Length: 296
Image 1 (cartoon, rainbow, N blue to C red):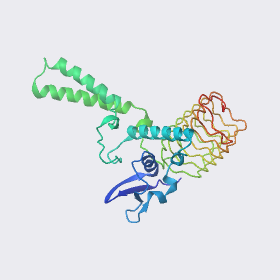
Image 2: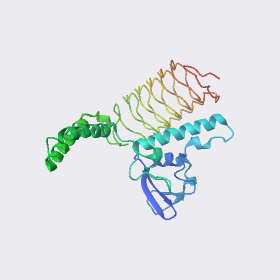
Image 3: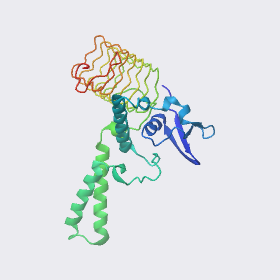
Image 4: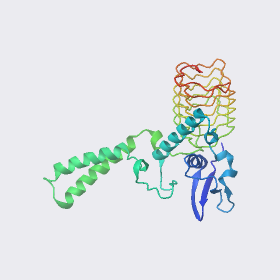
């Protein structure tokens, strides 16, 4: 398994980073990194973004005169923006002049935090009559911290797990944004895995289990996915160009805007699979409402 490459960005005299390759690609897609900005892995040798075509999302090459291609591009940008708002950290890139607190760029508070705030307000009102001064604050603070600790520990292991491209394959693994070209994961159990924007081009996942996994905008070009279980998987915008999907289980999978050009689908089960705006094996575009088969 390859280690993930990290990049620094430079605009004028301002250097930011390091960022994963996947994060850089999403910021390019959203226009937060421009093609004439500079990239470096060591902060010594710099090159323009335009010189790194592998970091430029394929959706950005859409024909401006093709309404379907433009719709695909807009969908990719909406998805990328939603993902960044879910995972925004203090090092994330924000366009100049835009406040992190303005409009929908403000990070949504976790449900636990909102629940604690509401519960705390109720406790404060009921305990004010019984406690005075600092004792009330101590008691309430202790309760809130105790409950928050219990809720954190009770969360599923997948939510607490660190995002790590070096961990071995297991159900629920988070390999989002990782670069894993050509890896061999035959018969691996990746049920419910988080594989958004992962690069698995040329990889072998034959007879693997990826049921319910999230492969949105992943790259699986020329990958061996024969007899793989992808039932109910989210595969929005995934690249499956020239991939081997013979006898694959794709029941209920969401393949909207997926690129299946040149893919082998003999024996694949597409019952209930969504193919809205997907690029079919013959490079035609499936109509909206395509379910279980590509409607032209």
